[in-house]
Length: 462
Ligand SMILES: *Cc1c(COP(=O)(O)O)cnc(C)c1O
Image (cartoon, rainbow, N blue to C red; front, side, top):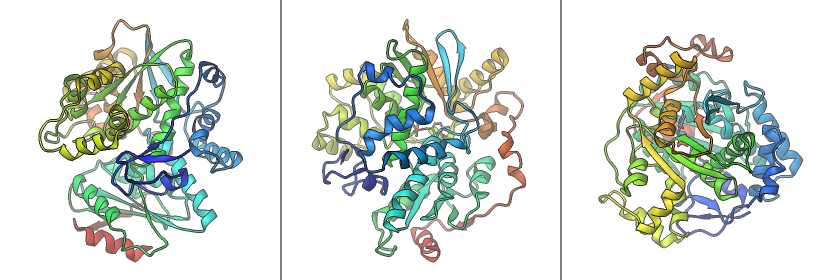
């Protein structure tokens, strides 16, 4: 399997090369050159597999023989062995045709564990062959940081540096990062906001001359292809349980960077009979405006109860646009270059194509709290605010469809107690393995809001 850049300025790369980087050198994102296609008979044959065995079947074609089957199997089984539910991704029925796919049973209680548990182990595996080390650098507004630290702390060929905005993440989120032990683990609290953290990370990736020649930076946010790849699996897992391939299934996906839902789109392209994909957004609704009105433009950032979806621009949307433009890198580059200079739209035919696959909705904080309250009072089911946005969007977009609708439950409610309290409910308890979180020792360094401060910090530790 080879990977190409959406911007068309980089030769095809193999899986290992794509794993060990961030953006493509031309500034684009890597996508598979060809997608594996599964027939209904192929899909049928996956039906009785456990989550880990299914994951191996789905991802193997993308790795193209670069990792021997038995080694890959070991990595996958280990990655999911720390999950707190035997089914890994249990499917729960809420009402007729309405389901939740619980993706929060991993060590850090959000769906990002599905990919980052594997990513840390894959890095270690490929680096031990070459005897190299890499430096992971990432910025987080919360969930990515803890999942990345937890996924990489045992990777002895990796030094990991996570930037978070000082005093601007929730206490649970901060403690989930700063209590991870390991001498290769570094938390930097930047005196700035999340955008400052992201800017510093981007600048560091653009000029890596501060590292010695045998080292490079690796990304852990969803521009890294491996993040997307591992998320394709649970769409298959849920759809198979609901009767695919002889029945179609729809999904509603709480969306920030368009990573998770892009994985659903790929599952559909690979042959999984997905009916609708609902892009669920909060008040930061650039994707909803695009899908419903063909209007792609930046507004101001809104702070909401679902902070992991508080974004202005969704980086992975470029991967989808590349397909929408018939994989024409020139057209994509033009579109991306004009972004930010006013509102953009795509051709009428292209927009029609978007609507054959995606629905969308935007849900405000008040409605989010109302959904949380009503579902808890009605069914005793406590949702996190991201999942509540997903469920409400599913309901907003449900048509007279015969397809069951699965909402991805992306986080455990205890991670986002602000919203639960605002909904008038009692603060949820952390699961047993995190009950002592507030008494664990924290480790982090406060640094000035400057690239040079971060670079000096890294240089002195690697
Ligand atoms: C990261 C995150 C999202 C958004 O996922 P994307 O892949 O960026 O669209 C939604 N919900 C939760 C809880 C998250 O942590």
